[in-house]
Amino acid sequence: MWGVVRVGLTVAVLACTGLSAARSDDFPSKPITIMVGLAPGGITDVTARLYAEAVSRSIGQRITIENRPAAAGALAAAAVQNAPPDGTMLLVFSGSQHATVAAMGSAPYDPVKGFSFITLLFNSVVAFVVPPDSPAATLEALFELGRKRAGGLSMGTPGLGSPSHLLGARVALAAKAPLQSIHYRGGAPMMADVLTGRVDFGVATLSTSRTFLMDNKLRALALDGETRWSGLPDVPILAEIGYGNEKVANWFGVAAPAGTPPAIVQKLREEFVKASRDPELQKRLAENGTLIATSTSEEMRALMVEEVAAMDGLVKTLGLRQQ
Figure 1 (tube, rainbow, N blue to C red):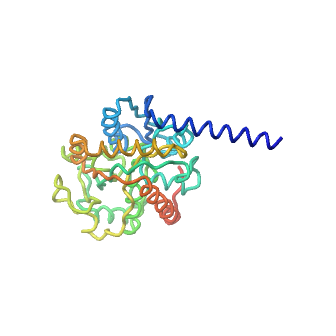
Figure 2 (figure 1 turned 60 degrees about the vertical axis):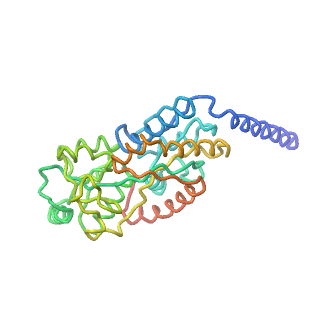
Figure 3 (figure 1 turned 30 degrees about the vertical axis):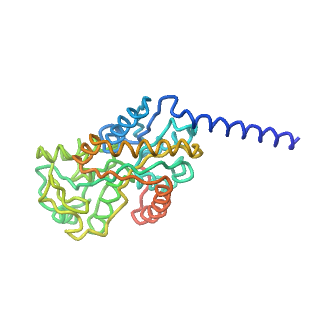
């Protein structure tokens, strides 16, 4: 009996292998969906749409963005992990958030084994922002306010485990400023509460906060970047004010379900890397302080492995948990 089953399984495996090869040859033969685990309007969503537009033009196939802003991106990640590995369901995500949610022990996905990694897409630049009427003129003044106030500061983030959340928490921890983190389902809904002063400050990407900063509806106290941003030349970077060691990974990338045929992964990588060279995409990302980054599939996987290990320690240090 078991011999018959083994033969049957072997035939089935060979059949699937042949099917995968066939699909690789004519890929993509049907529309592609890119899952985003955050709300529309934030950096992940906006940049995913820019890439989707460029890749769609190149391959002559429709690419749809689907937002699932719940459980800090876990539902979107699980949907992609469990999708057929044929390259038609992809995930655009933050490496640190992808790893952090998993490190908290409640994620319905495996951040490494569940995916075939395609390429990095970009790195984000993050700003510490306050409403225009905030009494804090500097980041240190903001933290001093938190140290004196009962209950400390309230900080808005675009999601639990996002680079913005982790950076803000690490910097506040180093400053010994009591902090309550308020997590939203993306950068856009977070900004609404920062603008109205419902939270003391927000940690947001330049992509999300740039327009408000330029219109003087928000003030930036510091940026996380290698150099000052030309759009805000008077705003210091964290390294200039004593927080240069409080870094977190700020990379974002795209992945497919584990088991996606290598030929499809390679085809997708070629298309996303090609899109990164599109002048219009480069212009729009640069305007938002977003830095394009690409990688091989193997390099991205190695970064993900490193990030999972790093976030496991940070989750314990910060006492993070799902809310």
